[in-house]
Image (cartoon, rainbow, N blue to C red; front, side, top):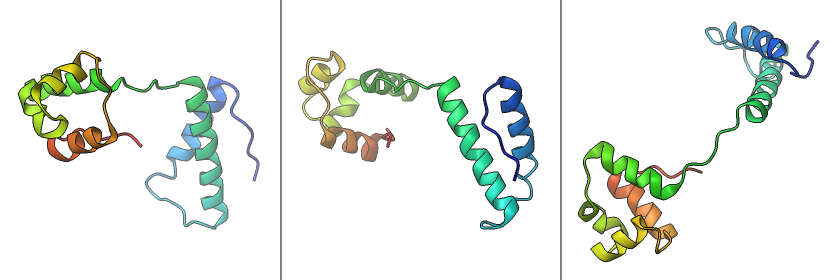
Length: 115
């Protein structure tokens, strides 16, 4: 198995090209081809994480964005967050979100939490 680290954009494109050939016909795990794909994917993921980092979304901004998308009002968040004044405090960043609020937002309003 001749695999090298991904240091350059050309290395990255070569690895992607090789891995993409396996997408339609995925090799069985624990075979030489399966091991090769697994190693290449690990290298690609590491390169992408280093080269193209994704910042975490601010939770309050995510809530506001979702509210705008779905046409929700602060009153719609009361079942998940609590009294209306608490909703306004959260949206104004005067009060932090709790774990319970986050889970209730997810369960009641299609706000999926990030792992």
